[in-house]
Length: 61
Image (cartoon, rainbow, N blue to C red; front, side, top):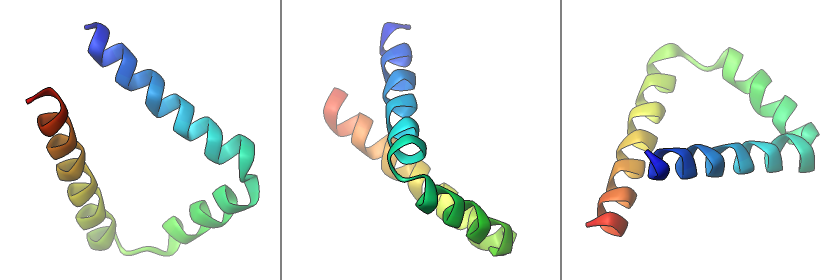
Protein backbone atom coordinates (compact mmCIF):
# COMPACT_ATOMS: atom_id res chain seq x y z
CA UNK A 1 0.00 0.00 0.00
CA UNK A 2 2.87 2.38 0.71
CA UNK A 3 4.24 1.85 -2.82
CA UNK A 4 0.85 2.77 -4.26
CA UNK A 5 0.70 5.94 -2.19
CA UNK A 6 4.26 6.85 -3.20
CA UNK A 7 3.36 6.36 -6.87
CA UNK A 8 0.21 8.45 -6.44
CA UNK A 9 2.29 11.17 -4.82
CA UNK A 10 4.70 11.20 -7.77
CA UNK A 11 1.79 11.50 -10.20
CA UNK A 12 0.55 14.52 -8.23
CA UNK A 13 4.03 16.07 -8.30
CA UNK A 14 4.25 15.75 -12.09
CA UNK A 15 0.72 17.08 -12.55
CA UNK A 16 1.55 19.99 -10.28
CA UNK A 17 4.69 20.73 -12.28
CA UNK A 18 2.66 20.89 -15.47
CA UNK A 19 -0.16 23.07 -14.14
CA UNK A 20 1.94 25.20 -11.81
CA UNK A 21 5.02 25.61 -13.93
CA UNK A 22 3.61 25.57 -17.45
CA UNK A 23 -0.05 26.64 -17.33
CA UNK A 24 -0.12 27.83 -20.95
CA UNK A 25 1.14 24.44 -22.15
CA UNK A 26 -1.42 22.67 -19.96
CA UNK A 27 -4.24 24.68 -21.56
CA UNK A 28 -2.96 23.96 -25.05
CA UNK A 29 -2.67 20.24 -24.31
CA UNK A 30 -6.21 20.18 -22.93
CA UNK A 31 -7.52 21.90 -26.07
CA UNK A 32 -5.64 19.42 -28.27
CA UNK A 33 -7.17 16.49 -26.40
CA UNK A 34 -10.68 17.71 -27.24
CA UNK A 35 -9.88 17.56 -30.96
CA UNK A 36 -8.11 14.18 -30.78
CA UNK A 37 -10.04 11.14 -32.08
CA UNK A 38 -11.06 8.62 -29.43
CA UNK A 39 -9.13 5.83 -31.12
CA UNK A 40 -5.91 7.82 -30.98
CA UNK A 41 -6.51 8.67 -27.32
CA UNK A 42 -7.14 5.03 -26.53
CA UNK A 43 -3.97 3.98 -28.36
CA UNK A 44 -1.81 6.56 -26.61
CA UNK A 45 -3.33 5.64 -23.25
CA UNK A 46 -2.62 1.95 -23.75
CA UNK A 47 0.97 2.62 -24.84
CA UNK A 48 1.60 4.89 -21.84
CA UNK A 49 0.02 2.34 -19.51
CA UNK A 50 2.19 -0.45 -20.95
CA UNK A 51 5.29 1.74 -20.57
CA UNK A 52 4.39 2.37 -16.94
CA UNK A 53 3.96 -1.34 -16.26
CA UNK A 54 7.30 -2.03 -17.94
CA UNK A 55 9.06 0.61 -15.84
CA UNK A 56 7.57 -0.73 -12.62
CA UNK A 57 8.46 -4.29 -13.63
CA UNK A 58 12.07 -3.30 -14.40
CA UNK A 59 12.49 -1.31 -11.18
CA UNK A 60 10.69 -3.69 -8.84
CA UNK A 61 11.70 -6.85 -10.78
